[in-house]
Amino acid sequence: MSLPQTSPKQYQLIETRLQEKLDNGTTRCHLCLWRCKIGHGQRGFCQAHVNRNGTLYNLSYGILSAIDIGAIEDKPVKHFRPGTQVMSVGSFGCNFRCGGCHNLDISWGVEALDELAQGESTAAYVTPEDLIAAALRYKVDGIAFTYSEPAVWLEYVQDVAELAHKAGLYTLYVSNSFVTDEALELMAAQVDVLCSDIKSLSDDFYQDICKLSSVEQVLGSIEKAHKLGIHVETRTNIIPTKNDNLDELTRIAQWIYDHLGADSPWHITRFFPAYKLSHLPMTPSDIMHKAYNAAKKIGLNNVYVYDDKGCDCAESNTPVSAYFDTDTDKMHEIKKCAASCCGDEGILLKKYE
Image (cartoon, rainbow, N blue to C red; front, side):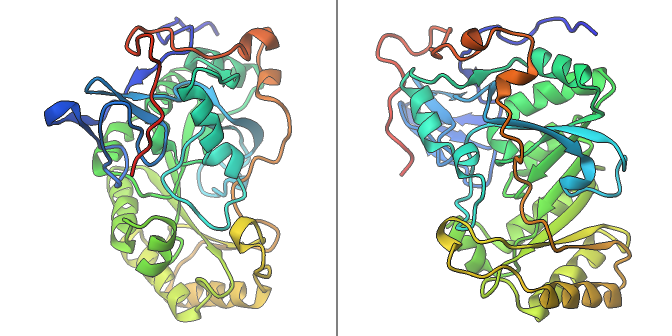
């Protein structure tokens, strides 16, 4: 299937689709609930959006950090198109700083985004058309946006998802749900499935990884997606000493039952030590199964325990370029914005305070 080319063939900055232009050339980003106020030459908390002369641009449009192919159940999603294959794609930039992150290099991507900002990046640039063509060539059934928070690269997500639907592919959005109602409303027509974390019911837990976040905001976004008609499945990674209190886990199950329904799936996953939480043990099976039993007692019908699974991590070391019928050297050419918005000075490196 040949798709008409509508996106830039060469890497360039793309205007952020949810932005508010303020006084003195500042802008406010409305993709996630940080709602960063950003001045000229500054980047937001995610590092992926930059203000150039009063307009906010996505720095990472079309820049892919990882691709993997596997079963939709691995996301984990069990009640939408079971038995199908999904192509998972990730980009750089995230609005959380989770202490146990397994995807640091391909999620936060601080160094990669700095290189893009300096015009020194050799990361792979893939147009939405080329990504869909690859998905069809590999005969997958859907596209999953994952490994970092997709709201950060919503412009690309939206363009890929629109083409995916035209090509008969479903779309899956793996999220921390610290996203705005505006972003959810913009994506609703193009996203079929949301797999969202409910990390905890403690504001202290959330504020440790994102100082502006709250449980109410995250749960509100998940419920909003459900009301917009997106199929929602939730997951909780149980971390010893952090969110392994049975009462709290029971309350998570109760919230799912009350707000998403008795049939809404809940995935309980095991924590594996990583990064700043390398000193903690793996999650004992006992607490995982106690949470399962509590959820079943409440009335949740579809509860799943994963003794062997933690995050949705890229498991393949296959280079991004291997999935495409293009010259590898050309794909990894140094990325300098092909547009004229930056001028000779390039993109400044001042970051969000």
